[in-house]
Image (cartoon, rainbow, N blue to C red):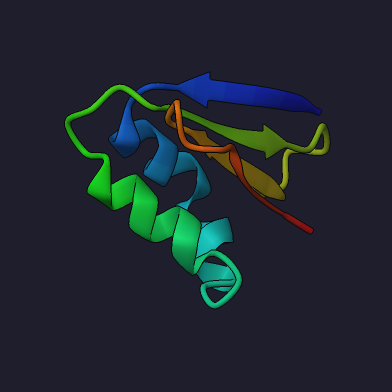
Length: 72
């Protein structure tokens, strides 16, 4: 298992969009904020399980705003 991070919205969505949209109601704020921050320099991250399955967690951090975390 490993946390992966990027400043690229496109890389983040390629990796974590399936997970985030599978629980869209729970992740509405994170998804909306991610799209609103296009062109800025936030830090995106997702957790990849060691068994190679889809991500099971994600986060967005755009200081000074608090960290947004999705997981479960």
